[in-house]
Image 1: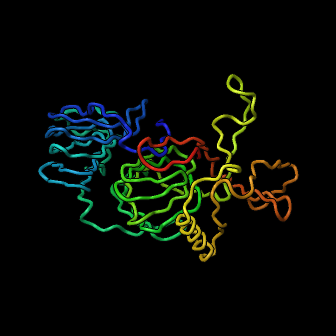
Image 2: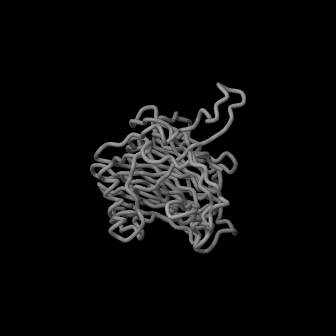
Image 3: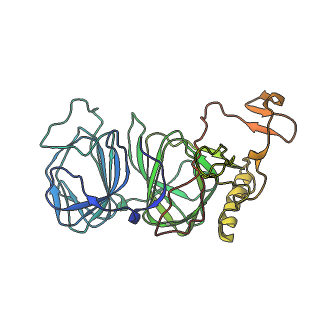
Length: 365
C-alpha cells in the first residue's frame, strides 16, 4: 500500500527523470506518492521540451490533469483544467504536450508500462472507455452532502461503476469550515490546485498534497479568502465518519532510547499543548458548529487542541458500563458511543510537514 503523506508541498520534492515509456522529448517528475508493490503513483510532471507518443495501451488506469500549458489528445487541444482518464487495457490515442506544460499524472492498479500500437485487452469491461474533458467549460455542482455547513461544490471527473473509484474537483467556497475530525473506509488523496485553507497544523496553499490510507483521522479545515480547489481521488465511496471532543495520547515504555518514560517520544499530548488557531478560524469553526445545531444535529463548541478535558487520562472501568442502542452508559455524565460497523481509526501523531510553506506548529494527527 502507499504510505501516509500529510500534508506536503509539491515544491519540497526533488525532480526525477519522468518514467514515460515510448515518448519522444524530455520531461521530469516529482513523485508525490508511490505504491512500491504495484507501481501505482501520483506525480507532478513538467515537460522540458515538446513531448509526445503514439497511441497504445497503458498498464494502469491513467489520468492526466493540466495545471498549466497545453495538451493535445488525438487532435483535440486542452489547456489548464484539461482532463483525460484512460482505463488500463483500453486503447489510448496519441498524446502531445508543449514545452513548459505541467500536469498531474496518476497511475492506479499498475505501473508505467505502455504498449505502442497494442489492441484493447480482452479483460476490459465494455463500459470502460476514454474520458476527456476541458473542465473549465462547465460549472461546479452542489455537493450532495456538504458536511457540517454549505459551501462545498464539485465536478465529478470519472467514476468507476464497479470499483467505486472516483476522481473529482472540489471547491470549498470562502468561509466554509468543518469543525470535526473525519476518517473514511477508503483512501483519500488530494492536490490543491488553487486557493488557501487553514488546517489544524497550519496553512495549506496551492501545490499542497496529501495521501491518507483508509481510517486515518484528519480535519479542522477552514477555507480562506477566495476559497480553495482540490483535485481529489478515492478508491471507493467517501463515507464520512466524524469525531468530536477528540484527544490523542499514546502510551508506551521506552526500551532502548532516552529515559524510561511512559509516554513515547512521538506523542503529541493534546491535553497540555495548545494548537495553533487564529481568531478568524475560531469564529468560522464555531459557525460550523452553530449550523449543525440549527439543523438539529449533535454538535459541541469547537475548542483548539490543548483546551478542555483530557479524557485519555481517565480510567474507565468497562465492567460498570451497560449497553443499549450502541451506547455504553455508566451514569448521566459518562457515555461512550460505539459504532460496530465503523472500524477503529488509525491515529497519525506526526504528520509530514512542508519545509518551505505554511506555518506548522507541531505534531498532530
